[in-house]
Image 1 (cartoon, rainbow, N blue to C red):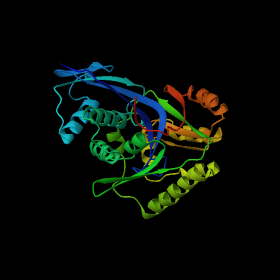
Image 2 (tube, rainbow, N blue to C red):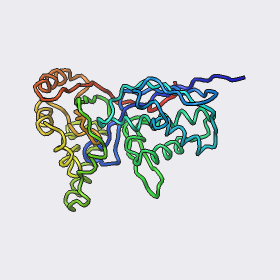
Image 3 (spheres, rainbow, N blue to C red):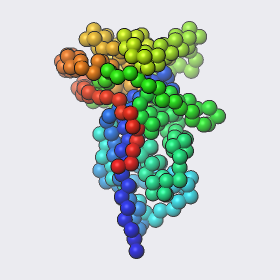
Image 4 (cartoon, rainbow, N blue to C red):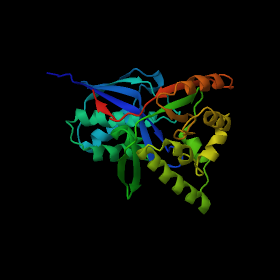
Length: 298
């Protein structure tokens, strides 16, 4: 007799780099993708997404199957339902959420044999880097690195009183294209610049010295190059600072721009919306907070 078991997973959006923390810093946000998994007698059924993703190349499915193979658990068929609110190819961790959702769904189907460390390693192996995967799994602000193919991560406490305003354009930017514009070598002074800024950034977050965030998010390794791919990038940064943001940076590989403001600041949202309405492209403004739980089974 076939027993139907529905497994539901919720994974948060993430914002990586946070300026100078290239490929090592990321934080989780209260915007989510939800996935439901059900083992079926045979075949593959995927619902809730565009028709071109309803096949074996679907990222959630690929991550799930890779995990099941690693665990050694065989399924005769799989049904996946997707509810995605994280905009894809915008620098908000959409692919990381899909990968992590697939890994977590497979782990639950197989009886939960994997530890969080195992899940982090498998998902990072698929994604290629842990800066989005780690905060999506653990929640909050996370520092993560790869050392000898192993992921090491640590959560950083963030003082209360801050929220994140995502400025999301209606155009996409692939991570591959955003990485292609980066130089293969950087000047020593640029590396030193970023070491100082990322150290100040982490201290400012944990101590509540939000007045230092404006300096802490400065970057010389990727934003100067990727910013050229986003029309109006520099002017939006300058306007955000003019309107009183605590700090503004390129989220992940972009093109989303993230502004940090005091949690009771409503004027910034209204005024930045008015400014973005004058741009050539349409921009959506999302009022977000940090997610402290990370991915969960529902």
